[in-house]
Amino acid sequence: MVKTIKKIGNSKGIIFDAALLDLAGLKEGDKLNVTVHEGGTITLVPDVETISSEDAGKAAEEIIAANSELFRRLSL
Image 1 (cartoon, rainbow, N blue to C red):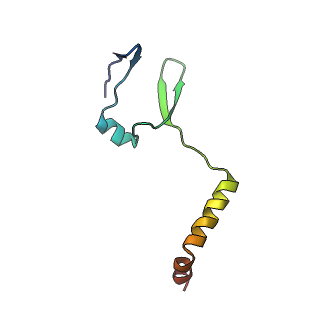
Image 2 (cartoon, rainbow, N blue to C red; image 1 turned 90 degrees about the vertical axis):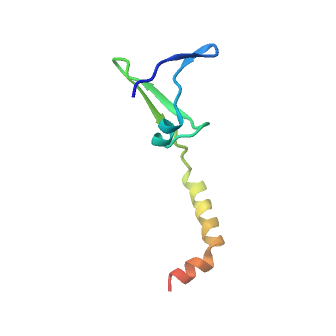
Image 3 (spheres, rainbow, N blue to C red; image 1 turned 135 degrees about the vertical axis):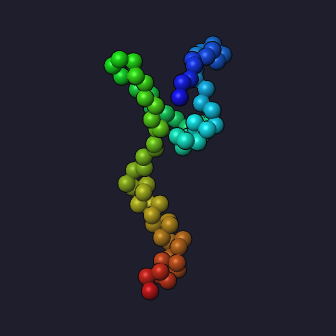
């Protein structure tokens, strides 16, 4: 797919149409890490937020507490 760099306000940019965003699993507001490689290649990678092990543990405890009856029935 070929895209053209265009003037957007006081900057230059590339427009990602809806089909391209859908294929990439992206939506408006998503953050991307941009890396410029030797030779001028540019990669865009979604910035995935990580969760600390402490926060993950708390979230798991909340899920288990909220669904304890379901988990009990599934274990039978």
